[in-house]
Amino acid sequence: MKSTDTESRFELYVTRTPGYLWARLFQKLGVHPIAVTLMSIVIGAASGYFFYLPTLKMNLIGILLLIWANWYDCADGQLARMTGKKTLIGRILDGFAGDVWFFCIYLGLCLRLTPEWGIWIWLLAAWAGIHCHGRQCAIADYYRNIHLWFFLGEEKSELATSRQEEKEYHSLKWKSSEWFHKLYLFFYIRYTKSQEAQTPRFQELFHAIQEKGSISEDMRQRFRADSLPLMPITNILTFDTRAGVLFLSVLIGMPWIYFIFEATALELLRYWMIHTHETFCQKYLDEVINNS
Image 1 (cartoon, rainbow, N blue to C red):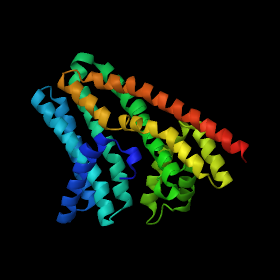
Image 2 (image 1 turned 90 degrees about the vertical axis):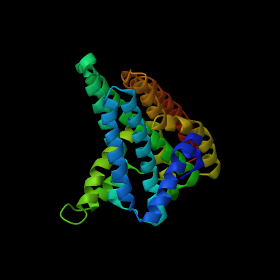
Image 3 (image 1 turned 120 degrees about the vertical axis):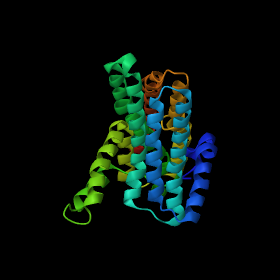
């Protein structure tokens, strides 16, 4: 684990532990982490078909497949760390896996609900999936990385800036063996910018800290204390709670509830989390400026 601060007990026992056991098995079998990621993508995508079918038996199979895919999604990163087989393509595929799962699930649910809802279910799914789901997961991931940056330091955090990524992007060439990395950065820069656009006060604070060149241990601990209550919210905005509501809505025969949940409850939670985080970032920004 990166830190117990960012892992809930549910995540630890329901996802991390099974993922770790799968990783140990794959390690003994000599399976490459990329192969595990690809299996995760296929299994998770297949769940969309079973959510499309309006029978309890098929929906239960879809639920089991998505849980299985999530275990593999957890296992591939642990396996990569166990074996030292960390690759750029593995990182890209790992980030791509969840998008493929949910695209197929949204497609299956929309096809299932079209006879009743018509074009409106497609519009609702597009809003919930593209506008809401994407931003919710992006900001949750960003806040976890910010928390780890303050708590564990720069070396143990994956917090990146679009400026750093753009600098690396422009240093690479298309007509060389670097083209794949450059293509990856092209899309990742846009992802990072979307995170930065949601956090203007933190961007000012981060820039002020970088200009100052250091941050006191006292501020690190106080920031961690302010940020820690938001970590359970970041977990709600990613997979576990989202999947739970999806499973429940499908099992009771009202899959449209899942889209409504993303577009309302999770969006309100995202707004509240951003407001809270930006408020205490402003407090620390004032402190850094006044002490400069």
